[in-house]
Amino acid sequence: MSEPVYHQTTVPAGQDEKKTTGLCGSDLAKPILALKVAQTLFSLIAFICEEIIEHCESCGGLYFFEFMSCSAFLLSLLVIIVYLTPLRNRVNIESFKKMDFYISAAVGVFFLIASIVFVATKDPHSIGDVAVAFGFLASLCFLGEAGLKFRQDRSLLKKKSPGNAANGPENAPLNQPPSTATANA
Image 1 (tube, rainbow, N blue to C red):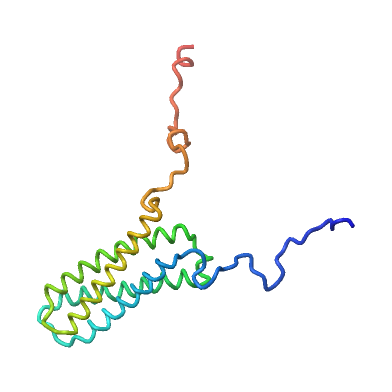
Image 2: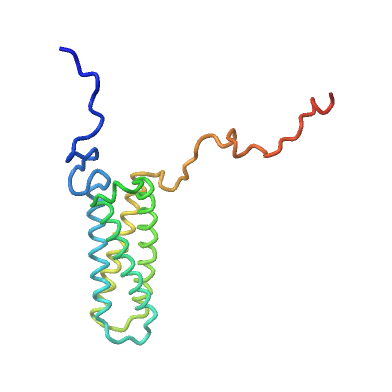
């Protein structure tokens, strides 16, 4: 028998070209996913515990901790949503991974600073101690994730070079002076 001249060029309805390999796809490793979930939970618990505090003498540290715990919760939740939903197919995943690395590192550092400042300025409340403990745990999860990602992919800090830039048109002068051979002729 002969083969058909025309082959099917479209995907039949109901079949996607991009198949996922489970809940978290192939873009997020299980240790990273566990750290993401821990970050989200710890920062949420820190935020809730901090919100329960009714009185404070020096509230600057409390406000900074409140801002960082809420921001950490929302950012980690957003990243989890992008990784675990079909949104990951709509973003450039390599750029998103790089952005996620920088977010994790920055939030980890600032959350650690906020936790230290809150310890130094908080009133002696037991709920404040719980908030600080979860703040430290969350910041360690953020920093641990950034460290783990850096160990896995050291190219996160490098800029992409489009090739040999010395030979590219970007480095050529706009108006090239006439050569000495044509000037002497």
